[in-house]
Length: 157
Image (cartoon, rainbow, N blue to C red; front, side, top):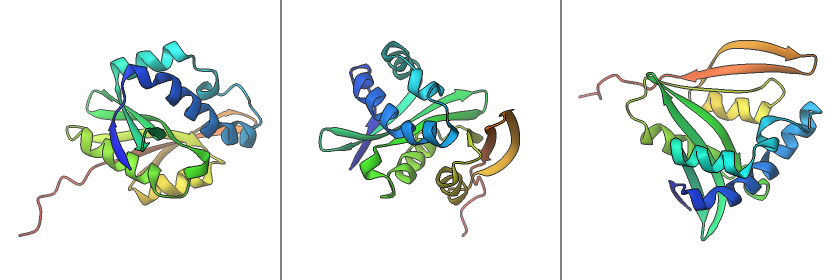
């Protein structure tokens, strides 16, 4: 598997992957109109052009992607997606680690997920993200905000 920066020409495949990956989230929360499922091809293309979007390739197939955008000193992480048939194989971990390495100037990495998304929460916590707050959006959704602060201590001598 290779992880590299996505190009605007990848937008269609990334959007297809995103829709497949977020379908289970939509079912979990009973909402077919979550933002990742209603985002347009043009919106995905614009994000690729304006932010850091990494893609995971298995041969020529895109099997995962993640977005990162620097806002002040924090990198806002979004749309971590892994192909349904490749979930549980470490791709999400590899993509997030690659994003952390690609934005070394970030003093923090911020992301959010739904409160019922236990797999996502386990992954983020395992990679050093800590819950900072929760926001109840409606009866069926509470958003959990998490932050990872990179270890900036000097290496041991």
